[in-house]
Image (cartoon, rainbow, N blue to C red; front, side):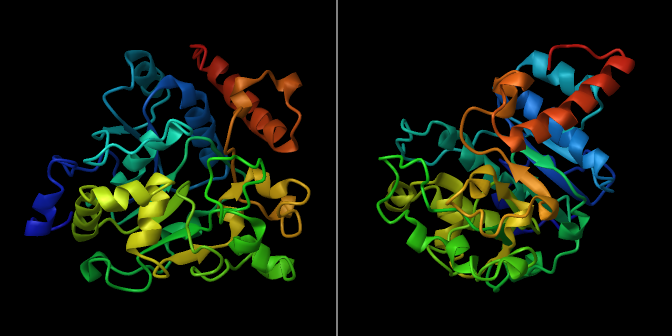
Length: 324
């Protein structure tokens, strides 16, 4: 448990009860605000267990998460912790991508000082291979207060904009993508990320490895009050982390946050290797659970359905059939 210091008091409103909801000092966490992503969360939990992870998944839920969702988590014994819904002091318009309104809350793991290590995962992820080594990855200790060179770890964001979304920044092009720099060294790309300053130097917020720190979280809360900064953050949490800690984060290889679009021909299929991927990230819509299994056109969606069907079969044997 972290000492009660002035920095701890700065996060008291966000984490008023820093008591572990599980015995483990190291945890996976995932944010859940509604039941739209609940099937994804349940599949994620199943995939972590199927990969023989030694660490539990903790669901971080907000006030908007309904009773039916709580019942589903409780039926499966998935531990949970209430967190506030984070928003900046000034409104940032994400009407073109409403999902980003939720993304500020993905910064909460920095405040969970009851744990030594938190690895935040998006609920639209699926673990294919054990990645417990992330719990031992060398990062700056919390006492460095975000002033070191290894503040957190993440994989790069892909800035290729393969769907050519018109509201994306004009510099989001393949030439500025960190993954493009690895096309000539695909073997190395499986085990090493491009430098944190490669391309636009932006982490993807889907997987974040952090040593919780009240001091770092105080920096985040302070930045949420800056209207000038918030207006410039086109991608919410990951834009903020890139700004606050530019070049001072550990860039993981894509295999830990394998965005499904990287596999597409002409995007980053030059480095993608199916048998090396540890964790698939189903960015963009539709999600695998939004379509019936026989409607899936992507191999990665079929991977999700294979593991999810295993989960559903196991749950039926336990008498759990709630539609999630």
